[in-house]
Length: 216
Image (cartoon, rainbow, N blue to C red; front, top):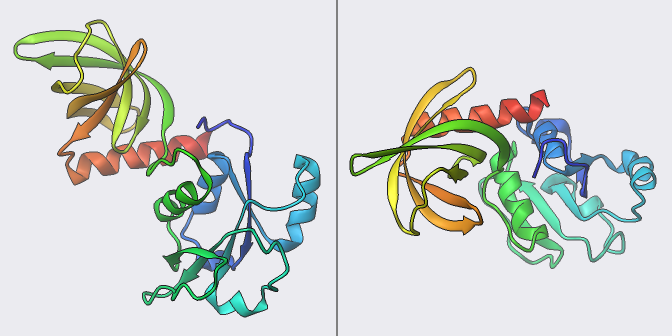
């Protein structure tokens, strides 16, 4: 999803801001998931032409205040402690420990709402790339980037299953050198999965994506 993509989902939050980690709501909004309080819902729904939320996020301490007949078919993600949930309430489809982080929220929301869920956000980019394998070098461009992989437009065709060294630089972060496997094609481009990414490199990619989403 593009950072500039308009909101495609409305999520009703029966939880205070302290139940979410810093910036998680802002980043999710940029990814198309608008999280609003119940008192904000009518105005948002009217402006977006919607009559019901897609999902509700409920602090477990407020679950008893949610009437059974209010959007009874709308799934609920519960914000809870380390004990999780029992599954006795059929409306509850998932649970996340408070304060809910962006990655945990994104992954569960994707699993609940999307037909083809992603585990991490993907950001459109255009970054010059250098590739090498078995003494051969070629260039390309990274067209989209996630924590676990990227979409590469390459000057040299590569077979599925091939692993090579990928080099590119992130603004304000610097160069990255990663092992990448060709796991799919999105003609004419190659879908790459990063292999054995170090915690430092993974954090650099994650921070870059989050900054870019907030700065857009």
